[in-house]
Length: 203
View 1 (cartoon, rainbow, N blue to C red):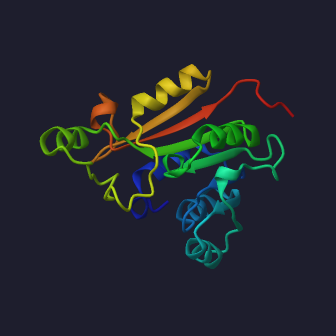
View 2: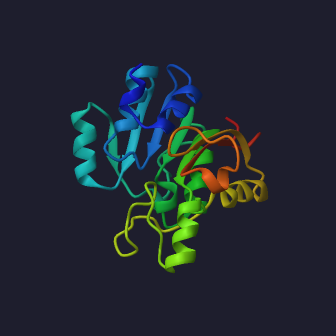
């Protein structure tokens, strides 16, 4: 495995997903992660993406990707249609995160979510000292051109899961120089979670 050729959070996702699993990637972008999973874990892959240029790049990689807005739901997929659903760097970009997450958990018993941590210390310092919307390596956009609609922290997401009886099975936190083991809400640039709801949407 060429570990240096892909982002750190991909390593965690590769470990969590079983070989030969079926995977649906919601907001798959140019298909970099999905292509890696096909190559390294021999998954049966399908993606959904709204950006047509990104879809062309996915097709060039040999991926099956549908042009669709995930905010409109996943009604064409039955309960537990996939072993895993991925929402990596797309959860914070949807208009209706509750609906999207509920649909993802219906379509698969296991969902992987990754998002930038708005509470990283560099973002806090910028807000405090400059009084401006922060920009970090995980939040590189300006306020006027960002695709992100929801600015959540790691603590926000953990609290969100607890309130909705969503089980956090595994987690991984990305820092500037590697994984973050302590004070994740302060030091991590991004969080990756494997979540599930026990007993939900049985076949």
